[in-house]
Image (cartoon, rainbow, N blue to C red; front, side, top):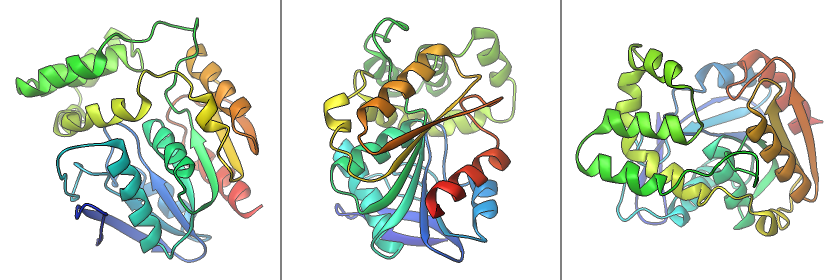
Length: 258
């Protein structure tokens, strides 16, 4: 483990492995830097891969008050630790964070985003006051209930799937990271596709979706790809919101090095 420091003094933990051009992995909700370990190992023969704990997760600090701008500064600090510029891959809310960071001037040379969780009007209802309600549960120390609410109304996970997850070992990780859910929700705001801001993305971008993901998620990816000027859109057959690492790794390698 290595550490770097964000602009507000927050200590950020990250792992670095491999050899080649720098590639920073940005995780989504309920994830810390351990989650993309297998993907990083697959990419390490061609890249120097940095996977970091976003603030409030794992071994990273969590200086208050939270603001999306602070998370953008965190990513900038990790890219600086990578050598000053890097390829960037973001998944889910991490994809939305990566997009916002590039819009703010992050020195990314190429960008890949996988299903940033926006919602196109008419494809599904946007959850009402979800960040506020999740935060209220967290203030009451009802971490499990906060995680459940987020899953049911954020990605619209089926209730039976959430029940199954609650009985699995991974639920303890969800509870442990529940306090960061308001951060993920802040990054996507009202979940409308920020088309005007996306039109200012000025690096080559690959926008990915899974063919088995819900229609609302796939339409949101379509809208992102349409809004980003220099972008490609690729649908991964047989994959959903969490694509298999052995499918994802060659796609990332081809785009970043191609």
